[in-house]
Each structure stands twice: as C-alpha cells, then as structure tokens.
Amino acid sequence: MAQTVTEKIIAAHLLDGTMNPGENIAIRIDQTLTQDATGTMAYLQFETMGLDRIKTDVSVSYVDHNTLQEDWKNMDDHRYLQSVAAKYGLWFSRPGNGICHQVHLERFGLPGKTLLGSDSHTPTGGGLGMLAIGAGGLDVAVAMGGGAFHLVMPKIIGVRLSGALTRGVSAKDVILEVLRRETVKGGVGAVYEYFGDGAASLSVPQRATITNMGAELGATSSVFPSDSVTREYLEDRGRGDGWIELSADPDAGYDHIIDIDLSRLKPLAAQPHSPDAVAPVADIAGIPVDQVVIGSCTNSSLDDLAAVAEIMKGRTVAPGVSAGIAPGSRTTLLAADKAGILGELIRSGFRILESACGPCIGMGFAPKSGGVSLRTFNRNFKGRSGTADAQLYLVSPETAAAAALTGKISDPALLDFSKPDTREFMLEGLALAADGMLIAPLPPEEAARVAIERGPNIKPCPVPVPIGDGVSLEVILKTGDNVTTDDIMPAGAKVLPLRSNIPEISKFAFARLDENFWKRAQEAGSSIIVGGTNYGQGSSREHAALAPMYLGIKIVLVKSFARIHKANLINYGILPLVFSDPADYGKIRQGDTLALSGIHGFLEGNGSELTVTNTTKNESYRVLLEADTRDRTILRAGGL
Ligand code: SF4
Image (cartoon, rainbow, N blue to C red; front, side, top):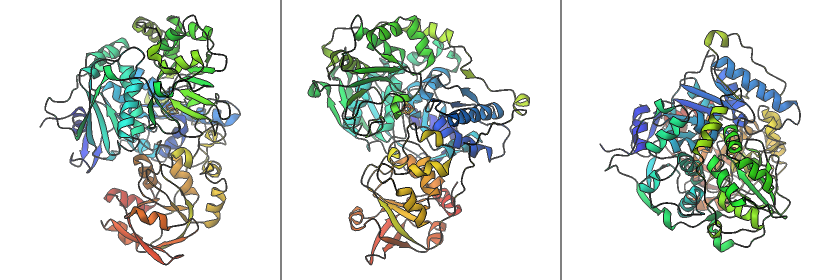
C-alpha cells in the first residue's frame, strides 16, 4: 500500500496497534533528548527503574534553558545531569553549547529514525526526515529504559509547497502562513507532511524552522522528505553514512492537502498574543519597536544570522531599539565568526547573548514594560518575555532585522539585500566545534564507577496518591480557553532553578491567574480544576501536571485538552475529563463542589461517559474520559 513518509517511519518502528488514524499505537524510540528544565525530573524517574544503562541508540542531555548561575541551585542541577549522563551512557551537552533542537539537528538527527524529546519543539528534527515527537519527561525516561512510546496514530495532513521563496520572505513566513490557515488547534492528532518542488528548494535549517513551529499548530509532529539536500547537510557534518532517501509514495493518501505557493508569500507576523494571530507585515508596518531578538530553536541557524548581518551591513541599530542575538549553537557562533557575520552584528549594535534559550523564556533579556518586542521565536504568549505587559510579535530574522534598522515594524521585502552562501563557513565552524562542550558517553565499565552528584536542590520525585472510588471535590480554579502550560507552571529565572524541587516549585502553580492558588489547593487537600478549550496548550512541561498533582488536584474537567498535557496528566494520575456538552462549562462556578462515584469500576471497564454532580447547585453533567486500556491502568494505579 502506498505510504507517506510518516507512515513509513511508523511502520518501521511499530510495536503494537494498527496504523489507522485515531487508534492507539506503540512505537520503538531510537533517540531521546532532554533539556535541563525537564531533564532533572526525567532522570530522577529513570533512576527509579534500576537499569545500568540506557537502551536507546542515542540519548542526549542538554543544558540550555537555565544557564544563569545566580546561586548554587542551577549548578547543582547541571552537575546532577552531567553525572547521570556519565553513569547511564548518555551524551551531555554543556550549558552554552546551544539549544537542544539546534544542536540535535546538527550533531545527531538522522532520517527515518524516531526521536522522543522532553520538549515540545522536538519536532524540529522533522526537518531531517525523522519522526520527532515532544512528550513528558516520564515518557522519555520510559523510552530510555527501552519501553515503547504510546500515542494515537496521527492523521497525515499534506502540505504541498510549490515555487520558491522571494527576497525578504523566509521559512518563518511559510509556517506563519500554515498557522494563519490552520490555527493553534488545527494540528491536534495530526502530522504535517511537506512535499513538492517548493519543499525540495528549502535547506535543512529552513525545513527545521517549519517543523519546529509545527508545535504551535498543536501537531504531533511535522516532517519533510529526506533527499539530496538532507544528504548534503549530513555529509557536511560527517554523518553522510546515516543518510537514507525517504519520500512519500506517489499515490500516498493524506487526510487533506494544503497548497502553498512560496513565490506568492509575503512577510508575515504573529501578533500579540497567539502564534496564529497572523497578519501581513505590510499591514502593521509603522508600529514603533522597543526590542528585537534573534535566536531560539526556531531561527538561529547561520543563514538566519547571515540574513540579519546582510540587512545591517554598514548600518546601525536604531537608537530606540535594544537588539540582541542568541545563536542557536556554539557551532553556529563559531561559523558566524569565520564568516564575518558576528563582527558585523557586534559592530551594528546587537548584544550577543549566550547560545541558549534565554530571552525565549524571559531569561536575561526582557523588553521594557509595555514595550513592543519583535522576536524570531515560536511563542508569544503573554508574559513569556519576562515582561507581563510587553507586546510580543513573532517574525522572520529578515523582518526582525528590518525593525532593528528602522525602529519600527517594516517590510523587509522593500529592503535591498542578498543572502551570501554560508556553506564554507559552516564547514569551518563545524571543524572547530569538535570540542569539550559535548561530552561523549563513557564505556560501561567506567560508567559503573561514576557517583551521581546530588546537591540539596535535588529532591525525590513525589509519588501520587490514586484517586478514590468516590470523590467530592471543590472547584479550586475555573479557567478560560487556551490556558497554556506557562499559565499553569511559569518558567523564568525565579522558578526554573526549582525544577527538581516540587514542594517549592508548586508555590508558583497558576500564580499568573491567582497567586494564592497553591495555598488554597493545599488547604483543600483534594480538588478539581475546570477549564475551557485547548487546556494545557504550549509545551511538554510536565511540571504543569506534577505541581497540580502535588497540590492535590485529582481531576481536570475541560472543554478540550492539548495532547501532550493530557498525556502528562494521565502519567501523574490526574483524571482528564471533558464536557460531553461544552455548554455545561458555563454552569459551574469556582467554589462549587463536584461529586463523582464508581470511579474505580469505570476505569476498569471501557465506558467513556460518567456523570458529575454539582452538589452546590444540585445539577448533573455528562463528562467523557477519552482513554485507552493502558491509560486507565495508569490512572487506577495513580500514575505511570
Ligand atoms: Fe528553548 Fe524557546 Fe526553543 Fe523552548 S522554544 S527550546 S525555550 S528556544
């Protein structure tokens, strides 16, 4: 039977289930990645499995989120991560080496392989023709231990690209166009698969920009074919022997196909505060800009930096703009130096930040209060920059550079510039990057002698208490639509160092919505959260499930869930229920008491509908649990 690229990779890794969209399947995982914010918990969980060594082909522990050394806490975490990597056979990417997705693309990603990462932008790897999926740290720990990854067989949405990008228009505009059409909910339960001559015309970093931001569509993943462009990219990085050709069969079937003519695209921007609030840059031109930031795992390849340098050539950053660059990897930084790009950026007035996530999560380079920030990143949720009332726009490096130059939102297509060929410089950067920032796994006998370093900031992973058969729970919080994992468990310099200390980090849960949430929840003992649509959108951050679990949340009842967050709730024993009739959401108030009975029998069976009684108002609602047998077993046990 004719197959898409996605179906070919899944078929080659299928351990259980049939590949019909919507059915539960289990696949084998070849590679894993973690970043520090999710990694410490994933490795604490891995340690509990009692294994001597990881069972994946390649697993890498990256430190990119919290590289600030304000006190001992981050250093404790970094040393823990480094010692765990040494003991269990992982690669370790030191702080400052780069952002996990960029470094993984450059150093480890391979077409046809599966990659599971405890970070929602893991699908960046799809730019190399691999099936790369973001998941909670616990799922990644299980995969490192040789366990299957369970998911719903996605539907495959084809994106047929034709034509070629024109001056001033970039890969970022392609994914912004997909977001404009499909919205942040369009990709739930789907993989976006790109093909056509337009796809063939894009470089691997351009493809990776598109697959990276497929996460904002809510998609399971995004993938490009593996072709001669992929082969050249891998050969340049000394990994040509891992290349395989991979393309969809000519008559492969897609759920539906989206057509985009690259030659007709114009520069686009996602306006505050959602990645799908997309408008043509020309329509919003003239808005004064206070901050411009280039970087993140979406747009920090050498070509991205080259485009910015070209636009800035011989000119300077406008006086009213604070401009910064966080190169995606140290390799890119070295190549940018060789190419003269770095010098041009420094000369023109850009601040050079560390090769890390930094400003993407409000660390170390926040905009002024109420300021307008143009960023080449993938997320513009309110407050993510570290400044609660800043206006965040997501744009291409070209549009960001045009704003740095003019001090206002400006259409880069109107500027006169051309991009240089950077391949030779990238090769020089790669040659220089064979370094001590990426530490290889130790042989098993040496690894066995490693002692794990566990400072006082490393607390044990709390163990959930299974839900009772009958419960009566206060609605401790009622939220609106599109609550993000940032809303549930914020990041930032104050919170991130507490990632391995659940009692302390839980005090920040929902702090943006209600700073006393944690106290009220703890006092209630057990409680329930009620929410709107797309609850838990955003990231794989499992602390957004762990902290509520620690605070006694037993059930989250919403209109709909974002995929990864729902899986994380199940992993931590929290019942994820959805309203059978979304109109019932409006009938419940914060402070009401909701009762359920017969929960254990319900979880043992395979029925999907339950009745919830609002004892405050004396009314009942039908609610649904969409969970397979494995999920139900996990929920009965109180967590994975
Ligand atoms: Fe880092 Fe931002 Fe990318 Fe997340 S989205 S991995 S915080 S750069």
